[in-house]
Image 1 (cartoon, helix red, strand yellow):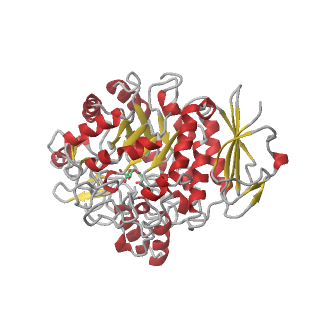
Image 2 (cartoon, rainbow, N blue to C red):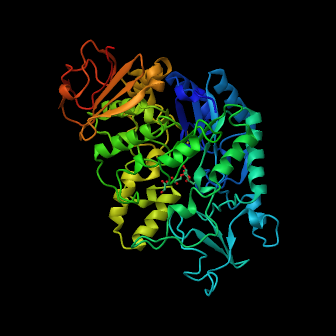
Image 3 (cartoon, protein in one colour):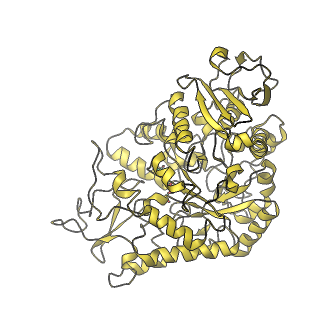
Length: 562
Ligand code: ISL
């Protein structure tokens, strides 16, 4: 891999197509809707668009269950629409990255349908296993191992016809592919090559570190009170991970073509990340970590706890240090699986929403790595505010709700946790105008109740809005070498409300200082580098307070005098 790949100064904008823009009034976003709104993305200055899955899918998990990797789902449009989107993006200097979901397929994929027949050559393309010895197939406890599904319940589904079980680490409509079989791997690489030939510029790889599992599949350790095991060592980062990544890289020409790759590292630490993104090897460009988005809950997302800021900033700092010499970071606080950051770690009250969204954006974008912006984050969208289980569409929400209530957790407690952490928080449709502007029909998920106040038209028109701030941050990354390559040092690591760090090269130094609270804060001048002669490059608050004080959620980027 080259020393400074092009994505080290790039910013990615993630589009969740079903919630972005609906051009035909069916209530679901589509590719023409994206084409129509591409200038919104171009106006930010983003370099890359990552599209969540648009392939043919029964939509059990909103497209993360794929039935045909080579065709566009009719709900999103046609292949001609896709080609037009790629061309329109490229015309604006924007690259297109596809979601690659190859740990599992849909159970409606022809490969899996064929594999249901025990005599089929495709049987070994998935993990089919007999019942646990001594147990009657299909009875409780007869599952081949005690592995749980991430979406609740057992990770094994019983198939009465053949009397065996298949593995599904996600929903039962998402059977895991068996990457041990070389035919599976070649089929995936060939499919990737076809998309590259069509003009796509890279891949976001869904749960990529689950593709190598530790064989044989055996029981894992169960935590007290948990009916299933989620033991990392068995399901993730298996012994053939590196081999598979390098084989894929070579077979698709990833390094050779400088394709963008980001692998989702569900369950894995900074050492795994360094190995998978090493600059001296041809594997992945970067990975998504889950560590920093786990600091505000205990174990499960259903046990949220208040954020203790030092945990978050120290975690990110550890990843900065861990990948400083080798590897590369992705930087994100939102995506289609995470709640809205302004509700989660900012202050989504009318008084502080915009400023806190800008403060969060500032600290994240001034770290080293490739920042990701999730649709709606750039206007400071807030959580959905759902209060009953019926309002949720997400398969994960329903699975976790069923598991938790069955094990005796009060329904209200689960609803509170989902309101804070549920994935549908990020999936409400884009509010383009005060009236909505997402669809002329009935949206598949309701728009946020705040749409009249929080929408694209109003925010973009405001020179001090969230969108303008993101544009300035992207501009800074494009123009300032120190933002791209400067060394990172966290200051005041234990401070509970201030986030302070420096970025330095031999020629340049920046100080980032942010008040992550809804009250005024003094600046501990004595514990920071001198601000004498410093230039203020960017601030989240206008006109800004005196240097010794930070307004609520005031974030400043200074260039220090050399
Ligand atoms: O955080 C999670 C674990 O509880 C899940 O929300 C999430 O599913 C997991 O992080 C993996 O995510 C990816 O793969 C899933 C898909 O549902 C997610 O949307 C995707 O981002 C299965 O393909």
